Length: 367
Image 1 (cartoon, rainbow, N blue to C red):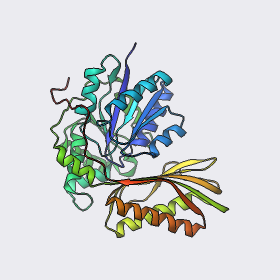
Image 2 (tube, helix red, strand yellow):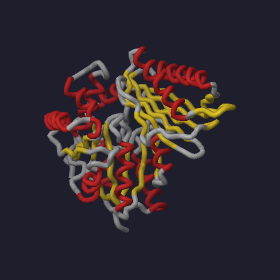
Image 3 (cartoon, rainbow, N blue to C red):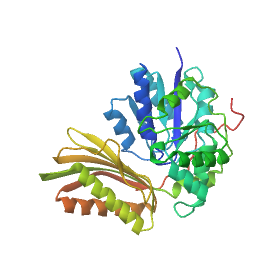
Image 4 (cartoon, one colour):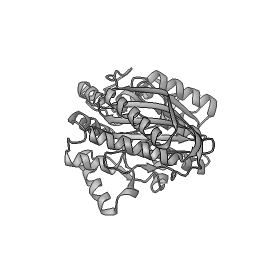
């Protein structure tokens, strides 16, 4: 039986991993190759999973913990997707608060499943705002433990992908590349997953390069656990109905604006907030990755007026989970009142991730 390549894609919350996976799958399809995707989250009801499924990309989901803590599930889901879909490559999207992937995922895969899987180099995606935060050593947005996590993510990469080049000019890109070089000294590729600039080069790297998981780091797991615990996690699904027609994009935009304004007023810091909007005919998502940012629709946010729709909300915020829960429900209730609609929560979970406890951690020399 021939081996199938697995490409693990990491990076901090809001780096554009979902859009990048979508772009990579499209590029692979152009080449006559089929991608499978495994998504990952600390909770359930993941926007990323639904996005991939709506694009008819074979997708499996691992919830309730990161790949390192759910290693057996990762192998099981990879085997299932191979058996049922026969992809040419599996793109595994790690949760944005995860690091130490080389020691806890790549090395065990290499040792125990060498006969089944070939490993693509570990790609860590990063976006300009987070790099600027790192350069400023700013503690205003996130505590020092989160900075530690972010730096470790970069340091273990086989390739750092500077995403969202469409949001900065050439001079800014060159300055950011210098910062990354000083921090990590690791090969880097510039890319815009949104415009597809640099995507073919990235896919070439995933398909052809070797030397996967070359950097096994020393990780202080107490600091790592504090970094994850500093982030409040909220996943929710909502059914919105009305007796009259309303605009899905205007409702989602208003909900996003209320949440953003409430987070700023409460002293919270948004790492990633995304809302997937689904009607009977259309699907799109709107996302925000910082307090001062502008929400962006992935596909332009073009919807026909409707009387019902579904929302999937994923929020990752430096905040107490109870406060995050309260803010989300208050924002939803206020938006429902403004648009004179009924908004019924079908699912809601809000928590801080538990300390990571990898199934395996192999600290010997990477091979």
